[in-house]
Every structure is written in C-alpha cells, then in structure tokens.
Image (cartoon, rainbow, N blue to C red; front, side, top):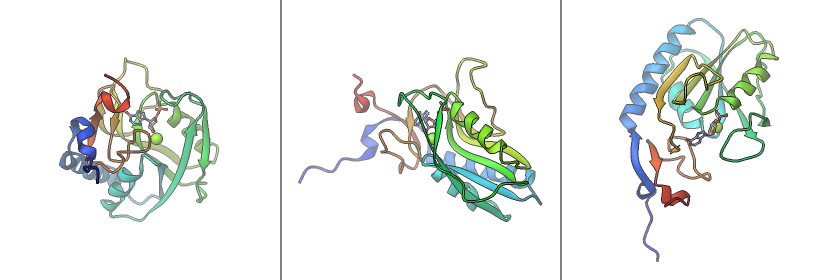
Length: 187
Ligand code: IMP
Ligand code: MG
C-alpha cells in the first residue's frame, strides 16, 4: 500500500483558518438578515466553488429564503477569465420581482460576475446584489464588480479550500490556503 497522502501536505500556508472563516460567515449572515428583513430573497449560489460558503451562510439566516444555483464555465484559457461565460446550469426559479443575492467564492477579474449580473438583470428582479467570500486585491480600478458583501480581501495569490479548487481538488479543505508551487508544476 502506498503511504496515505494528506491534502494538507500540499498547502504552503493557511491564509484563513476555519474558525476565522466561520466567524466571518456568521457576521455576513447577520448583515444580510438585517438588510433583507421582510423581503422575498433568493440566494443564487454559483457552482461549484460557492457551495461551502452558501450552505454555511444560509444556516445562519433565521428568515425564509430560497436557494437556487447556477453553474458557469468561461471560454478559452483556463487560468484567466475571458469574461465570455457559458451557462452550464441555469436557475430553476423565476426571479421576476424578487431580490437576488449572488453567492460566489471569489472575485478575481470580476468578469464572470459582471456577465452573470447582466444576464440576471434581464429577468426583471427587484434587486441584484453580490456576496463574495473572497476578493483579490488588485491594482486600483481593476475590479469590474463591487460586491455589497465581502468576506475577506486577499493578496493576488492562487488559493484553494472551502469550495475553491485546483484541478477540481482541495474543495473539501475546511480553510483557505495557498498551494505549494510544486503542486502546480512550479519550482
Ligand atoms: P473572474 O471572472 O476572473 O472574477 O474569475 C472568478 C472565478 O475564477 C472564480 O469563481 C473561481 O472559480 C476562479 N478563481 C479565481 N481565482 C481563484 C483562486 O485563487 N483559486 C481558485 N479559483 C479561482
Ligand atoms: Mg467560480
């Protein structure tokens, strides 16, 4: 038998620990609950990266909400978003006249979210807002979307865990970590 390989061995360092993540999710949920009190709210989770965040977030919401999901893939180069997005799975819910909160794992260029917001705006919702767990710090003015709710601003490094993947792996890590460059073919 080969010796078991731990996912944790592939992590250079933990950027956001599990307790820090969970505390922040609870705080975001409290703000959302206050802002949307008495409104018809549909949470739109973006598959697959936004799933962990979405399910933890809703468990803190003591109000009636609906959960739905969309899956997208961006055309072209895998490491940089082209901004041209294909919808792989659409919402099952009609959003006409309803308040939408997009729940996303991370904003990098923001192009994916901008496309989604434009697409959803055509369906005549009462409002659209964005809740992103992570926002990558870029040079000023780079981000094309300003989320209403942000969990953490992080350095412009490739991160995994808590929904975020590298080659579809590491989504099940309970924290956000930076991958060792050796894992993706670096030195
Ligand atoms: P954007 O269109 O450039 O904002 O791309 C956002 C999408 O790229 C996210 O929804 C993630 O799926 C993916 N992504 C961006 N940065 C990272 C990262 O550091 N780790 C894992 N996935 C990432
Ligand atoms: Mg994503």
